[in-house]
Amino acid sequence: MTGMTTVRLPLDIDMRLAMLTKVWQKTKSQVIKEILESFFRAQENEESSYTLGKDFFGRYGSGKGNLSKDYKQIIKGKLHDKHHPR
Image 1 (cartoon, one colour):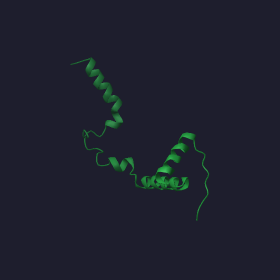
Image 2 (tube, one colour):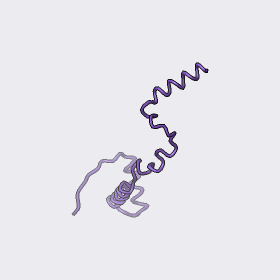
Image 3 (cartoon, helix red, strand yellow):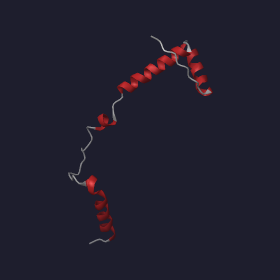
Image 4 (tube, helix red, strand yellow):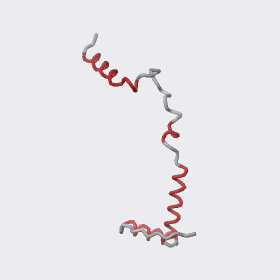
């Protein structure tokens, strides 16, 4: 089954597409299909940010479980200690 889609392209993109059709010796439709198929494959294989970073989460942790909750108070304390040394 084949669908029909019409796309209006800016002149610069249309000119680049025309160059590709000459280099690849294919029609505009063929070039667009190949580019879209490549894009869709890349999207399907793309890993989420979580998956890419999960091995690093918590790896260099301080061991303090309250940092995300109490960060404002911790920063205030550090600033106070900086400006009022003991």
